[in-house]
Image (cartoon, rainbow, N blue to C red; front, side, top):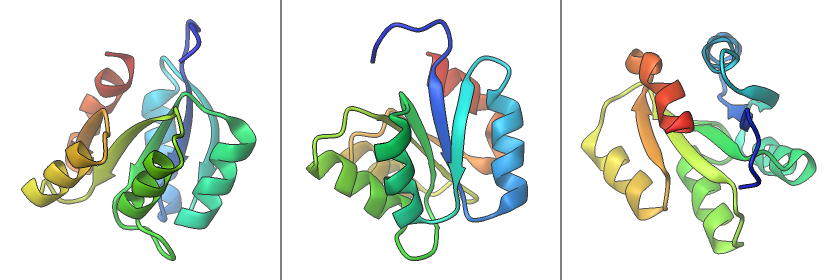
Length: 119
């Protein structure tokens, strides 16, 4: 990731309110460069916007966040991946780790999201 004072972040979640909430939390220390509502539009936005980090909802229509993460890794994308879910599920944590995600943050603990990106 090129050195910048504020990471460029793309937020992908199928719920408009959650996208706004995540963007508001991250806006404190990140530049939110875009949002997406499903897997295919997330992949398109990553290609177009070249963010440093993508925050992926695990459950999105057309292609899940896990499927997006797997495709990004398979294609060799350098984007850092942070997965989020409404459920603090150990299987999701393990899947996130196996896909090379830098973090898994349950949505009820969004206060941890900024730390997971800035680390």
